[in-house]
Image: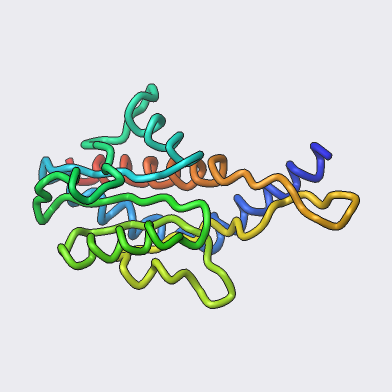
Length: 176
């Protein structure tokens, strides 16, 4: 089972590297605008993706200018126009996440969204300046009864988070 999981996960990472490299670079450039102008990058993830928030804030290499985006709009900060939001969604976005993205869009806040695209794309992408497809649409492992299990949304999101972080670091080094 571990070999199948590793093979499937490696396949997801390879598809992200091959298909999303430009979106990752575009996302990092958008986020760099906030960092360079001494404004904030607000990060959002719910449920298991709250792990991204911990990585961004408390890891040995925290994300520059990072703050947590509160889930409730009434707790949102008074955004500056150069503030940006980095949003991680495990699915193609639930109603709450869609509404959140729409409200950020209406306020003119730059938004980078990481979520899987389905057959019809990702509805949340219409509110994002940059959408990065996580490529994780269904669980990776087949069970004996034909169902599937093993949905490593945090692992895949952390891979994209680090890709954004490394690209942002390169952009900031070029800027200096």
